[in-house]
Image 1 (cartoon, rainbow, N blue to C red):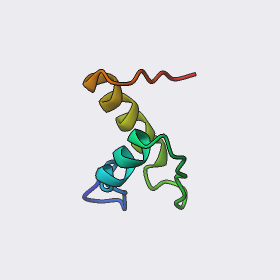
Image 2 (cartoon, rainbow, N blue to C red):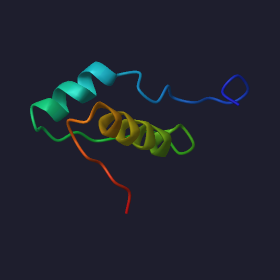
Image 3 (cartoon, rainbow, N blue to C red):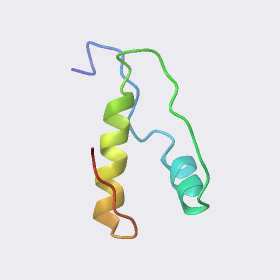
Length: 59
């Protein structure tokens, strides 16, 4: 329930993230607990798979 709880918008910096991926650069996800880090990674993997240029899978 984002309206009741503080959450980071999963792809709020999507241009930056996708630019780094396209340039084969590393990036880190650093945020306090319960702010959406795992959700970000799930959304990122879903979008990468949907676009078809990359394949991302969960372990």
